[in-house]
Image 1 (cartoon, rainbow, N blue to C red):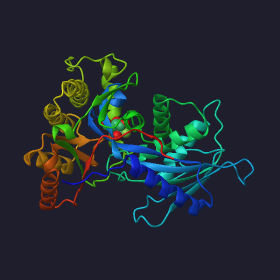
Image 2 (image 1 turned 180 degrees about the vertical axis):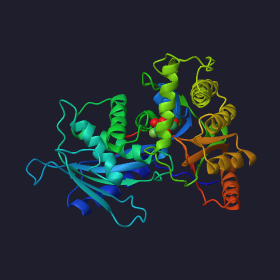
Image 3 (image 1 turned 90 degrees about the horizontal axis):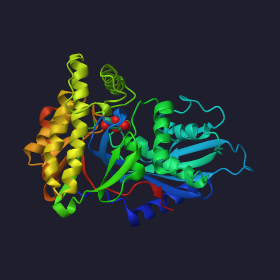
Image 4 (image 1 turned 180 degrees about the horizontal axis):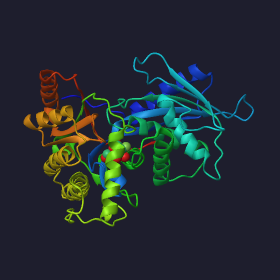
Length: 402
Ligand code: GAF
């Protein structure tokens, strides 16, 4: 079996201590604190969030961590933000950025720095909030570009840190909405609310059943180990970006479909609605969203009944719908899913926005290594770049570590 990165409890504290020590080396003084925010896997409910629908993600045991210190008013340039990250590809050099809060506008900060900067931008735009400059050091165990929300994890870690340090009193749904705005308005990706919500509201050992219309959230137990199961992530290492056209085009199709059906959103449209008035492509997009919402509800019902293995067929149906109707899969994701199923996985599907990124396979706990090997071999045979594979467990949502 491939061990997951057990990123909780004591290990978090050790990591936070190391980050604080590194912060002192970089900035010459101790941070005010250290916060962590996990990445996520979406169990089911894909491309439903921006349609006011249902999602069932879980926070994973891999996280972004930020050490932060507010600049004091007496310091030179108290409105400057200094960013540094150990999260560079080679893991040795620090990646650094600097900006000033007054006049901060989209496009002003490139690369990963846009995530904390986007959070600063939305907070500074709130009526009664004054954001001072600060120093931040980032470290993360969420692989970049794997479709596991590495960017949202950075945004969430930043907002929980600033919420605590500035005593903003923001609640979790409020922080989810603000980080979504950071992503939409500053980073420029027209994404929904699922990823931030999973990072903010996830609970260890559970999935988060979220109604994206109201942000009402319920915890659904996901006792994988008790059922002898594990979730294997297969990162295809095919790059994707939600700021590219494919994601936005799907979103626009859904909005056009809802409007043509006279509904405010696809959430208002019943599962079996007559879609014959829509053009063929729009009808397929809409059908995916309607059936995916129904699959989320069915998955929640099975988990609540204690039938964890029973969700496998729903995961498989979700993938087929994303591949055929929503057309956001790719050959590598399809091969990962098909090979995992052929190797005996209980269920498998792409997870996240698609066009690359990761698939998940629900497997017998002792079979994760064999499944991963089968997928790696199939990728080699097909001439694809080797995937990265690891087991994840549902972990705790974002918070202060030190
Ligand atoms: C990406 C987005 F960020 C989410 O909001 C969601 O739409 C997902 O794709 C598809 O379900 O992760």
